[in-house]
Each structure stands twice: as structure tokens, then as C-alpha cells.
Amino acid sequence: MTEKCANTFLAIMFERLPPTQTLRAFEAAARLGNYTRAGEELHLTHSAISHQIRALEQRTGRKLFQREGRQMVLTDGGRLLAGEVRQALLALDRALHIGQAERRRVGQALRVSVPPSFASAWLVPRLAAFHRQHPHIDISLRTSHELSELDFSDADVAIWYGRAGYKNFRCQRLLKEVIFPVCSPRFAASHPAITPHDLAHHSLLRFAHHGGWEPWFAAAGIRQGEPRTGPVYDDPMHLLDAAAADQGIALARSCLVRNHLADGRLVRLFDITAPARGNYFSVSPFDTEKTATIAEFQEWLGAILSDSTE
Image 1 (cartoon, rainbow, N blue to C red):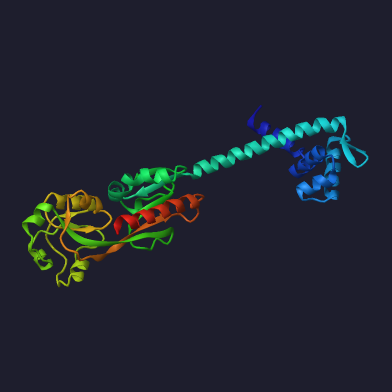
Image 2: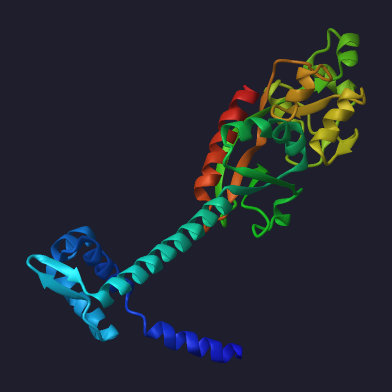
């Protein structure tokens, strides 16, 4: 049988089927033996149930019920049909539940796109904690350097550092960062009396994106422009590693430098901080079926980020 013939055959066969509501009315009446009770179960009137039964009898060409007192008793043909209809409705219910379960399963698999620096310094070490709290969500992590590289056919939600303004996406700010100078323990030990004004005489490491030293200089009361010399890094983690290797003083973002400070690879030079020019945002499409799952992930991110950067 060709595909066209098969489609025609199925169309004709399905056209002969009665509406699902008619089958449900018949099954309820057969099971309860009473049109009124069947109507109450299906939120229909006695008359509506009676109408559905008559319509089904006309389709099948046989009597399905006979009255015995106040009861509507199935005929032999009605009893046979009731068994088949009940099995068909049960099979349909199972099929629909399988589909719903599959949608729920897919909805719990969350594809997350993050910058490599954020993934290695912050997110990956904490994913085990997320899985313990949210065992029903499977995180699939992928890294991307630029928002322009993001294709939401390959990700459900992205974590980006920068400024608000992604008008085509749903954005939620996760935290505000601060910036401050850091250096190697060796440098700090050899310059115990260093002041913010002394920084002009030392190698200042520079980051290629999201602004530079000028906001911190202003917070420290230093009238000094952006450094024009010194190594430049386009990865914030490479910048911190360079400072830890005693190559100069880095301006660190509070979220990314936490691990370096905790294990002693870097130390803070001063208590002066300045607001970072960028923030971390959660970015996701407006038309997504995973809104609830994304919200769970965002809530966890916001709480943990706040705790980790205070």
C-alpha cells in the first residue's frame, strides 16, 4: 500500500469514528447504569447523555441499552462495545500521559551557555550543589565568548556579563559586582607601605573588555587616566593568573577572584572598591516552554552568587 493510499484509508476510517465525548458518555452510562449519574460525572445533563447514546446507536446500527425499572441495562451488543470503548479510552489516556511525561522530561534538561571564565571560576565547582538541591534538572553546560555567538536553538538560557539592553530576550540581573586591585602575596610582602597613588609606578595589568582602571582610580580619589602601557588580556581569568604569577597588579572583579583569594594565590591591596561597569545577567528567549525550569536555575544562581560575593 502506497503512502497516499494509506493516508486515504486512515482518513476514511477516522471519519467514521464518533466524537470522544460521545464515547465517554457511553462508557460512563455503561459503567454506572444510569444516565443521570453519568451526566453528573461528566458535568452534562441527563438529556445530553441520552442524546449522545442515541447518536452512537445510530452510528453502530444497534440498540445499546434497554430500560429495566430505573436502570439502563446494556444489551449484549452494548456490553461488547462498552468493553472495547473502555480499552480504547484507557489506551488513549496512556498515550497522552506518555506524551506529557516526555514533555516534562525534556523540560527538565536545561542547556546553559556561559562565558568560559565564569564556568571555570564559579559555576562548574558549584554544579554538584545545584544537582543536590534540584535533582530533577539536568544541566548541559556549553561555553561561548560573545553574546553574538549565542544561538538559542543550542541553549535554553545564557549567563552573560555586560550591560542590560538585550531587547529581544528576557533578561534578569543576577548581581552587581565590585572591582578592586589584587596582587601576588610576594608583591604585597615586598611593598607593605604601598598606597593607591603609588600604583602609577608599577605594572598595571589591563583587561581588553568592559572598561578598565579609571572607575577604581576615581573611587580612590586619584586623578589618573587609563593606563596606556602594561600587558593586556582578553580573558579575565588569564588576567588574574598573570597577577598571581607576579607579572603586575590586576583589577579584579569580585565574583571571579573569589577562589584566588581563598587559596592565597592573590591578595587584596586596599579596601577601596568601585562598582563594576558590567553585571551578570541571565538571558533567555521569550517564547520558551522551559520558563519554570529556567526560573528555578535563576533563583539558585541569584542566591548563591549573592552569598559568594558578599
